[in-house]
Amino acid sequence: MADGFAALDFTPEVEAAVAPLWERVKGRVTPLEWRVHAPLIAEINRIKREKNAVILAHNYMTPEIFHGVGDYVGDSLGLAREAARSDAKIIVQAGVHFMAETSKVLCPDKTVLIPDLRAGCSLASSITGADVKLIKQRYPGLPVVTYVNTTADVKAETDICCTSANAVQVVEWAAKQWGVDRVILIPDEFLARNVAAQTDVKIIAWQGRCEVHERFNAADIAEMRIAYPGAEILAHPECPEEVLAAADFAGSTAAMNDYVITRKPKQVVLITECSMASNVAADAPGTQFIGPCNLCPHMKRISLANIHEALVKEQFEVTVDPVLAARARLAVQRMIDLPPPAEPARYDLVKARHHVAVELI
Ligand code: 13P
Ligand code: SF4
Image: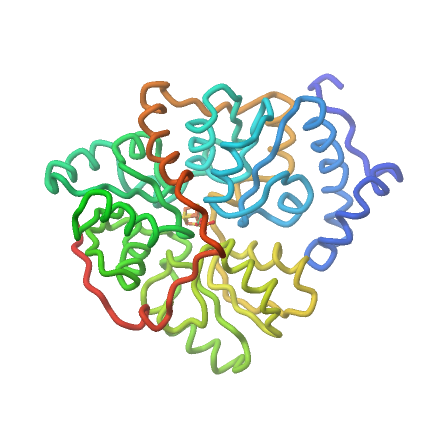
């Protein structure tokens, strides 16, 4: 075809090729939608083989991406680890821009593509490398722990990165290595407050927020408890402290996933991005998923259509200045080199119920 795209029809061959995937998503995707998704899934999977490409898909991707084309699916920590060990020539990041940058930082020789350059993050845009330089001047000698939800120039000013799956472990490691009792943990204020409740290390925090998780509050949880008294409530640590204090479990997206798969609750509320529930549902047939959830507008910029276009045109390539990347890599690699937790890290809710002050920059 003139634009270089193959005809994408829902032929019997396509239907047969993606039949096992349909079995996984049919509770969450309608047959009408599947007629549009299926030819794209078959074609994306064919091009991946042809070009030696892999797709790293975050837990917040829609189910047709997550189950249909993701070669590795998981939380931010898992995606970073997978990027580091991948031997593919091309990585397509089905997630947001900071995740693609992290992959590029870890894999400077690979081509890293993001299907939509506008897929940002309110946390990543809350702070710059220049801000971190000023913070270091204000708190000389204290280690800087930075959430992976940041740009490469912020990571380049950082001592070690963390994700919500290992933030407590990383903060305690940094305090011990530096021989100090205070650690700078930026830029997510709520993650910092939630980590502060879990450790004796004092936390200095920045006022960044995840625009998805900051919208939840204790009243949402109280309403859910009345409407669904048997439901188990799981919250992400980017939520305000009052939400964690009222929840039954808190952890990263991978930890929430693990909780549902292993504990098999009858009814569950996932206090996080909406696609999480759709993706876990495929492996949790006995669990009823109840709202509320919020959509991340950045994650939702990624679609099967733009993943397909990214692979065909090899766009949009994410590049990081090599000198900056080398500095950022030290911080990400330090995190990856820490021993992985025996099980997905959970936040102790008894501790979460005791308010601990943080110093806000
Ligand atoms: P995790 O997948 O690390 O829990 O992060 C959630 C998130 O908001 C990523 O943008
Ligand atoms: Fe950023 Fe929040 Fe969206 Fe994750 S869910 S990409 S932290 S805005």
